[in-house]
Length: 261
Image (cartoon, rainbow, N blue to C red):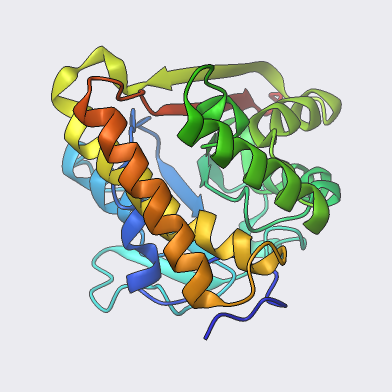
């Protein structure tokens, strides 16, 4: 049974993280890497395939429930990104990678998160923060995405979260004094071979986040009704895709650099 009072929209199990396994990553090579909201640590594992140099990896998440059984060469710790990190992590990391916290932290917590990340970066180190947010679902003449945008926008506002997550991260990085701050969009339409994975990713989002927000916001009475409405949306989405109307997935990425000493 879903807990509608739980701050984090998704469940805290490895299966709950399955929908987040497909990513559009461009690994940055550095001496020490730190992944916040690591969950099942798919990003760290993917990066390790490209970067065979001996490096130090550390993954943090608010809960250990999605930490993998086989941790490999990755260290894992439980921590809340909105709280200051232990002193042993200050000025330690060349790269901090954060992803998909739109449904996890409140709008007024971004400032603290950005400040805490700044503290653990080495001088000259980089922050890379990725989100699937309002930009992804802002499509005209697509009834499925219009419904998704409506649901997410109203539900996130009601919960005090920020649907314009990547824009908020950009603003807070600028305010915190980061250098070379950029907000970039990466779209799956650059490679037609990504279409099946993109469609599967959207279906996973409809099944999980959309259904959960319907229930949490009181737009439906119970889990069965939420699942049924999500199923209808998926049916309509697959119909549109079958007729050649398969929108790309846009991943928003903010890159920022800590000032040098």
